[in-house]
Length: 250
Ligand code: NDP
Ligand code: 8X3
Image (cartoon, rainbow, N blue to C red; front, side):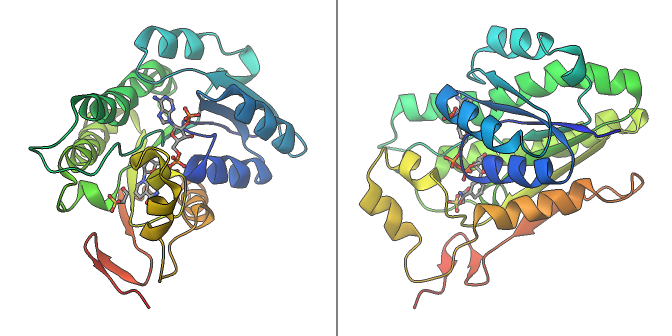
């Protein structure tokens, strides 16, 4: 019987590529995100391969998170794999110049949103004594960089929560692991720079950045290991990158 994966942030970038690869590998997919038009288009594309269900909610809205997940039809209600991917950076400013709305967004989405979605799904994994949670962290969750302050703090929180979830859920045989990418060419920088596409494009100039499919491929590898194998923590850089601030450009 095919497994079911719920992917947050499936409308773009890493989440979309992950939904695509898992769908082609016989997972039933629950696609989540706020942009319904994109959810519908992706559902149409992937329904050629598997059964798809879409859930449109903002991960900041805890009522919507619980209502959406609790509303899943029977065929999608048993979630084997949770990919906690939804998230973004908002702004790249010093702590003294940081924007309070940006700070709220990063903490509310990257940390609290991940917690709400996890809290809505963990009970059924505990009941079945099985499940797999993959938290998408970042190299920003391992090292801080100039002006990265609150985004880095939010991803350090994801790193801490990943370790904590693994400990707390250990008695129930639930796999928990994180993947921490370096620079991946997605809409991430467009969101960070609030639609400034030139500034966003410059982030990926002069080197070969990771593509969302590179991370999706690794996620597929991680979920397809035998059940006794849990890849707990993985950092993935483009070859040109050695740390958030060491990047070899042409
Ligand atoms: P994208 O901007 O391409 O995708 C972000 C996804 O998150 C979108 O699908 C978006 O969907 C969803 N999302 C954002 N805010 C919310 C919200 N409030 N409620 C629900 N969904 C939301 O970026 P990436 O694919 O790059 O980012 C995915 C993850 O990877 C993030 O956690 C990011 O921090 C992490 N990451 C990215 C790196 C990179 O260099 N790109 C490197 C390291 C980590 P919608 O807007 O439709 O709601
Ligand atoms: C995204 C990678 O280095 O911009 O998490 O923080 S970085």
